[in-house]
Every structure is written in C-alpha cells, then in structure tokens.
Length: 93
Image 1 (cartoon, rainbow, N blue to C red):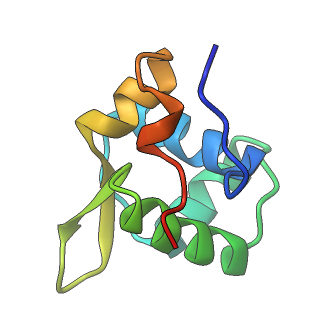
Image 2 (tube, helix red, strand yellow):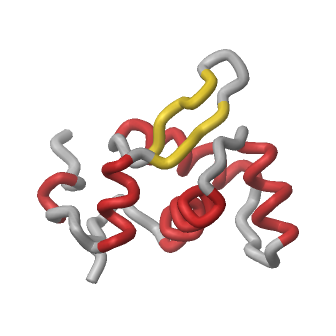
C-alpha cells in the first residue's frame, strides 16, 4: 500500500508512474503531451503545479535545470513500490 498523505492527489501517482515506467525525463509540456496520448487527462496547469510540489518533496528531480525537465528520484520509486514511510511525505509547514 502506498503512503498517501493529505497533500497528494491521484494526479501525482499518474505523473510518477509515467516517469517511472518509461524511465524518462520530460518537461511539463512534454509530460502533458505524452499523458494525453496515453488517454490520461491531466491539464498542463495541473501537471506544472504537481511537478513543482513533487520536486519540493523529493519525489522528482530537475534532470535539466535549464530546460526544466523532470525525472523520478529513488525516493519517488520507493513511494511507488510502497516502501516509503508516510512520515517522509508529511508536510512540515
């Protein structure tokens, strides 16, 4: 069972799963295009907002700072596998 916490959404799972399954780094726009091609309807605005939050929480990293491309981190993979304690994802603010 994945450790879902209050700030997470189902969109976070979709984004992380896509990045993990394809082992890619993408910009928010690239992710938007590719998720849409897969029939996963998440708006560009939501993708951009969720990537920023996932980055703050260490579940994705900026693979290319200049282009703004994101890739899943080991912590993100641990989350997907259910091997991450929920306390590691709790808001501290």
